[in-house]
Length: 389
Ligand SMILES: Cc1ncc(COP(=O)(O)O)c(C=O)c1O
Image (tube, rainbow, N blue to C red; front, side, top):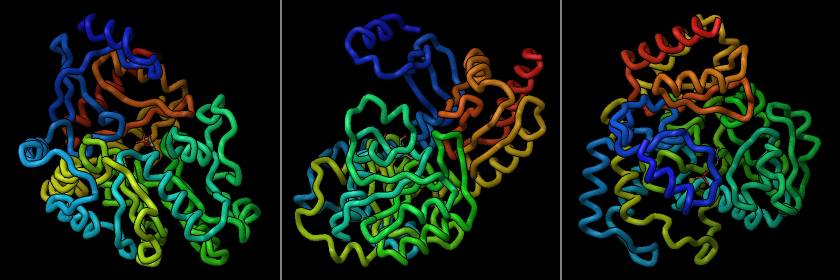
């Protein structure tokens, strides 16, 4: 590890993250290269971001070409790349969602969705779910159902209500004519990769329709191919009124988006929403290239095939209680604390993620992950299992 980078970051950067003890210099597909010349397998996908793998050549070319033409101008002007990126995004968006507002992060996407729900219904209330994570800004945090993130932030926004994830009956008890919208993370990733039943999502749609509230899916993690489809929507035949996106949509160039239905779009006017950087040409070039790579490299098919294989193999390991999730959003519930396995995997130069559930290890690899690399991971995990018994 280059001491210089470690010492300097520690000296000059706020200590907000417990970092992996490595200094990453370069990335290529599922691999990272450190300053010590070591190679790591990145099954955490650059924090669930690099859907096309690290530095996909076509994404790099698109960013380089755009940087030479125009790095930035805001939405105050028209731009050919933004126009094409918006059209391409709406071409792959679930039917029923027709327009996009570009932002810069997941939290910002959720802030804007919450704001639109409140503005367009004229109501104050928001329902979200215990275990859901929506970001660190005050509005997004007010909807986040994990206590440790809310703690010590002072008073959060009023009129936020929580229900247990997956429990439609309890959700119905907090629904009324003062509720503007329901914000749900369709697969609760940080909570330990938890899914609800089809009836829950369908019931949320019904409940929102009955009470004139908006249904918002936070697809910051589930979007852009992670589940083996472009989006979690329209799983179970449910289409929300808004979808929020971020993480991998521009392969690591910061970008978020709010997708909305026609019904919402026609009621949004000049000045209702704003952001300086949202929809900048550089990010839009990366978004357009990301969509092309997902389609042309058939990454959705790859996720479906490799995920089935990976889960099947994982399920046969002794130390594993359950394998949860969809596609390449995988939660492995161990019989012992997941951090033990994470540390051993790290010692074997494989990066994985923890979750809010101490027994669940998360894999959020690039969508490009291939079978031979999966076998390498499985062999390493079996070896660790043997060492630990
Ligand atoms: C489901 C979900 N929503 C929102 C966010 C917040 O995104 P950002 O960190 O880009 O603000 C995250 C980040 O991890 C997330 O996983």
